[in-house]
Length: 189
View (cartoon, helix red, strand yellow):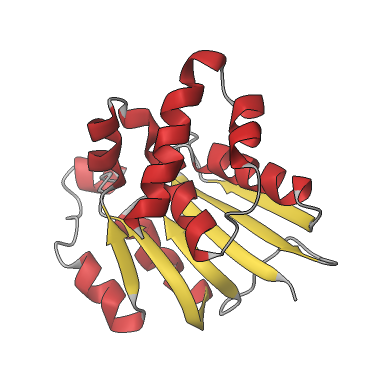
């Protein structure tokens, strides 16, 4: 059976890196994996989504509306934007984090204060504050790896040798903090 995971965020949050590590681990475990990524108008600050599908045989990397087993939102407005892609019995993990868009920054729009409540009207969401957890580890930039840890735990992918995948993917000086971040994400859910 093919499983589909949709990772969404804002440029600069590490959404693509998390997807690439996830894909490498799934391939290492022997799954057929297809990954697709879409960058918004701006690499930094624009919407970013990455679709990862894996199983015995995967025909396409594209996740249709209502087709994702898991939605992981690195930013909560992006969760709301992509909520329709989640299956009715799918799992959503939402990072309780805001990155104001250009219209919000310029004052043309406001960032809705009740986004999490709106999301919960549609799905049962696990909300974590990956930035707070990352800061607790000593490096705000590992929030993406914390969110990757939530995928590993929820999708029951813990038997994959993630340590070797992380070691082969990140710079040596960041391996240990990334391994702690991965565990932190698994513990958070």
